Amino acid sequence: MTQEEIRVILNEMAEERYRHFSASLLPGIDNILGVRLPNLRMVAKKIAKEDWKLCMAWKDKKYFEETMLQAMVLGYAKADINELLAVLASFIACIDNWSVNDSLCSSFKAAKQYQQEVWDFLMGYKDSSNEFEARFVAVMLRAYYINDNYIDKTLEVLGNIDTTKYYASMGTAWAFADAWTAYSTKTKKFLKEHTPDSVTYYKILQKCLQSYKISIEDKEYIKKEKNLFKMSQNHF
Image (cartoon, rainbow, N blue to C red; front, side, top):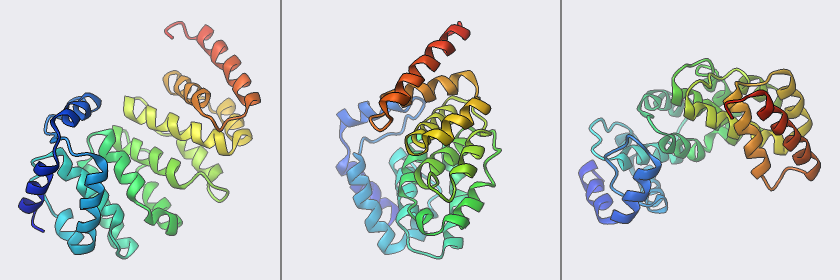
């Protein structure tokens, strides 16, 4: 399918009510058609089977959904990992919102099979001050590297991500909260010794309290920690 043919399909799938809903979640993004994610995934999987490279070569993207399709197609594409990572490196510069970022991360299943190769790739962005490059690292670590082989390194990288910008901070807090559910002792110890900035730390505690997977004992500890933290941070 050509890009123009895909635009026709996207316009046919667009819903005005869903466009308004999506726009409310993506401030500053004003080219949204309003296509639901399951429909985008269906189109992306079809493109990935046909000619994923052609899709990734799109430069003139009229709609937000076209960038979303590229994020998903890159995740669904079947190719040599080095080729995928080379295309990924080019695409990262296109990320300017959390939705494209997180859709890319959730789709990029190659990270499960090629843990070391993708880890090495991510380390090229771990010190970035760019808001969405930092979030990209955090969300990828959350999705694929909270496991026995990587948890210590994952915590170390998360602890050094630049969280001065909102979406990087939120992504990092989300990753730490998930690490707590899987490795509570390690994560609790790490956060005691390497406490993040106040905004991120508070978000970690909030997300942990919202989790259904964290023990009652840990939640009691988190509640006390949160209260102590609020007392010491008068801007909360």
